[in-house]
Image (cartoon, rainbow, N blue to C red; front, side):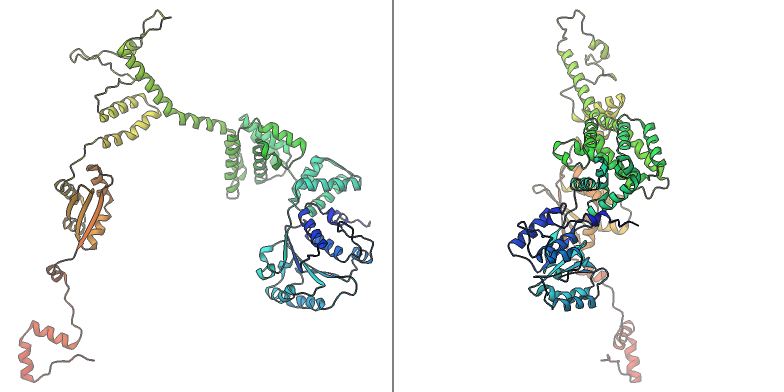
Length: 608
């Protein structure tokens, strides 16, 4: 077997300048070394494969380098750098907290910190996956981390900062590592291809970078896998086949079929995708990302958010001009609903096919909604135009100068009224509305308009019929706001009640009106009457409508019951003690006193 070294180890950065996508961290560490403002403990946190441990090793190497360069980089020539490259340095200790997370391991580490370095200036302790330490191990590590010796520096690395206790976080200088951007990852892969003598298409490397999801180490692992499959030439088709990724062409064809409302082609494309072994949810998520990219391309300010190669970016820009934003947003909503309910669907293929068919009919749905939204305004406008024409004809017939034919609108639309009434008002037909009468009341206008609209039919008739009752109620004259009228309305409500107890509460109420403040004063005896009347919302609404007082205020007054009522309602107490029972029976039968005297009995006493 050959001594093959994976790219993640072979091309691991050994200088700050070669770290990919973490310039803010490397530059800060360089400045701290140059100004001699080094912290005693560092915490490197971020997602996997972004260079946390790599930066920790480079920092440890630079700190013990005997002759660092002018830009604060290791020289790679001194004994310390050579020992570090061979993993034989005695001043750099690495601890994997995932497997060494107990108190004993931390105590052993603390014992090592007590000894100064034999050669070099610092002893550096790199603890990887520090969030895996136990609570007791964290507590044992606190004092040493807060006040370590001057020669000891701790570098902690973790992917889950939220699991570290706050007392540890407060003792560290924290550096947040970013995900590696796709362009930076593609540029790094191209450099490796040049070093290895491999020909690679930019689109293929872009797919590898996207699949890595911000982790450079993952992208190098995928790169080695693709090289093993394709050899010295990496093409786009080999990458999508090996990584089981849907081609961009499928999504471009799907969107074209949606715009052209070709449901049959959509179903055929989806069937082809299923035959290639892709699940429906993977296809829908990819289609959602495609629509997102189209939406991004419609504005020049958001085009940099598109993480694709140059050729694919041009195709996105061309298709985004053909797809309106309304279709994109509606399609994204349909895809979201499909994705949410996908796991619960029994027939998953039919579930996705229905979503595709709905997307193919988006334009028709938008057009229908537009017609419905504009229909009431259009009908009202036509009706107003017809009324204007009728009024003009009543005043004076108008004939254009260029025309020799008389106006026939009135003759076709209206017929004269019967001779008995001697009225020249035209009779409305189904095509034209009745003429406008200034002396007509509002209720009559609403009745005439609703009658005409119902004959005509359509959406306008529905809208008119809905407000017909409201118009008639509004035009009803108000009843004078007096005690007599209020008492009559109150008695009618009492007759409609079924519960005798509720009727008695309403009958006992005393009414009084205040016309100036628009208040109805209700005097009741006890809180039961107030609660029963206050819960009668129908009665309140009826009073407000009858008297035309929408802001009428109901004021309750509670009177204390009289002594006669209290005595009437007071329940007699039952005797409990012997003396109470004796008095009770004595009141019922006075002869008991004679019986007591004859036999010399003593009256009972209360027990203390």
